[in-house]
Amino acid sequence: MPLPEVHPPEEVTDDLGCFVFMAIFAVFGTIVAFATEVMWLIVPVVLITMALALFIAKQKIGIHLGVRHLQESEQAGLLIYSDSPLWKAHIEREWLPRFGPRVAVLNWSERRDWDPTDPLVQLFKGVADPEREFTPIVIALRKERRPLLFRFDPAFRLAKFGDREALETMERRMFGMVELS
Image 1: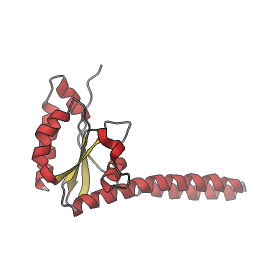
Image 2 (image 1 turned 180 degrees about the vertical axis):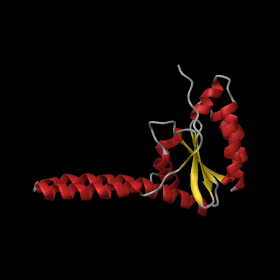
Image 3 (image 1 turned 90 degrees about the vertical axis):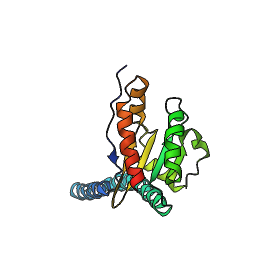
């Protein structure tokens, strides 16, 4: 089994580039429909565009609502972790006491009890990618800049095999950001 690759923190994207693409798609589809006189093409173009717009808008709005909630609560970020034996004890022993009330917490193992209208749940769903390591993650706010997303799963997996350097490096950077906020 290959060792996981640890990635640096990434900016949480909430730009409107997808909406620009959808507008171009809709205009192009409409032009093709009129040029070929196949007017029924407008219906699938509009339906696809609207479905994508609703999906992306829900994601982007969730990110904005969650970030605003954290800012209004004067919190520096959001931690999402689970009851995995790989990291639970470490996070509860090392991170939670150090974060204190400065960081909001969601436990993935308790997701059945989450309120889908909670802005923090919406923020998590806006940035989480089920195809990638999505727990534990920390979304750290930054003044006048986009939040940073720390994905800790690969670092914890390396630490399990004795290589703690990546985990310690990411933790230092994360704690530095959270404590400065």
